[in-house]
Image (tube, rainbow, N blue to C red):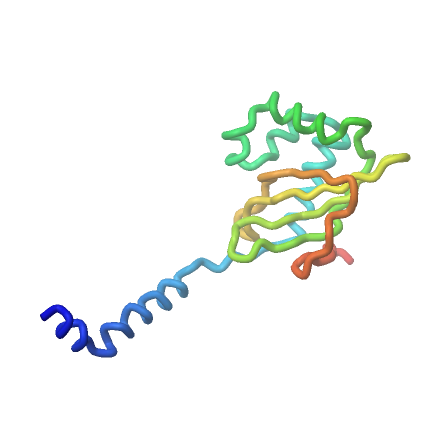
Length: 158
């Protein structure tokens, strides 16, 4: 009897769940990013935390989600470990990479002092509407590899 009932299902019984699923995908929020604003916030953070070595004010610029898991003392240790020899004298946001569908964007920065180059990737949490804060920070000894999504960061002034 069950086999007979299963065989009598109409096409609409299979079609409506598909339409429902497609409709749900349309409800996914579209995320708009402002890479210039994110880049400026990333530079601000890097200048304060890395160039000026002002750990307390750098910590204040972290995303709330990061501060829930990382104490000020832990942040101080991380910044120190990222810079075992020296700190940069200058930092510049050079590239960005959108995180499609996410409320976050990667900002790539280059730092310099007289003898060393610094390559950073900051994950900036936020959107064009909410503004940006540092969620995560990484440092590499060489430029980060190219990506099809990575783009040059251009300022609005030029």
